[in-house]
Length: 256
Image 1 (cartoon, rainbow, N blue to C red):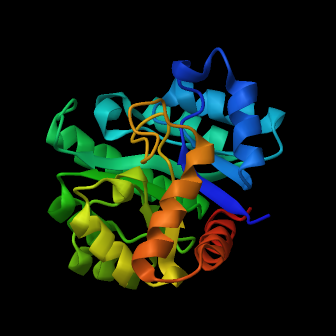
Image 2 (cartoon, rainbow, N blue to C red):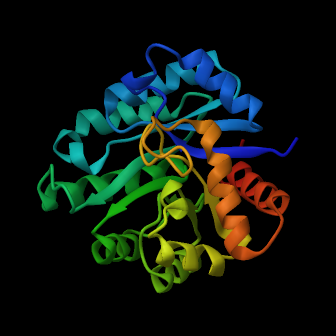
Image 3 (cartoon, rainbow, N blue to C red):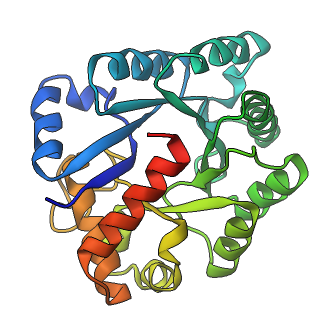
C-alpha cells in the first residue's frame, strides 16, 4: 500500500469527540502512516502532546495561532518551550498572521509570530506557518527574523507562485490542502503543477477544508489521499510518486 503523511491535522477538535478511534482507523486503512497534530493555543497544544503519547502515528506541534496572538505572553512562551521538550513534539506552530478575520490586532499577531520564530530558533525546531491574506507581512517577518536551521512549512498554501519560489529559497516547504481539489481552484492547481516535489507536503487541515468528493462533510486525515490525487493529476505523474515524495519530505522536516 502507498504511504501518505497528513502534515497538518487538528484531531483535538471537538468534532472528533465521538469517533476519534474510527477516524484514526480510517486514516490507517487509507495508507496514512503518520499525522502531525497541530496546536493553536496552549490548551490544544497540551492535548496534542497528550494524544501523541497515546498513539504511535500521531506527532504534536505546539504553538499559538494568530487568532489568539494576544495570549502569547512570556508565561505562555515559557510553557510552549516546556511542551516542546516532549519527545514527540516535532515543530513550533501554528504561528503566523491572519488578516482575513483579524481576531487579534495586527501588531499583536506580528509580535506573537516573531516571538515564536525566536523560540523555534532557540530550540532548533521547524516552524509551521499560518498565512491568510497577509502574504507581504509574513514574508517580511521571515526575512527579518530568519527561519530556524531546522526549516519549516507554509501550511495550506494560498500565495502566489513567486512567493512560493521565495519561500523555497528560504528553506521552507509548501503544503497544499483540500482547496486544490475545488472546481474554482485553477490558480492553486497551476502552482501545484509548478511545485517541485522536493519541496511539497500534503495536508487536510482537518476538520476544515474538506476536499472533493467529500466536500460538505467533516474533513479527516484519510481524505489527504484526495489532495495527493489532484496534485498527481495536474502534474501528470503517478500517484505513487507524489505519495513517496511528500512522505519523505514530511519525515525529513519533522524527524518522523
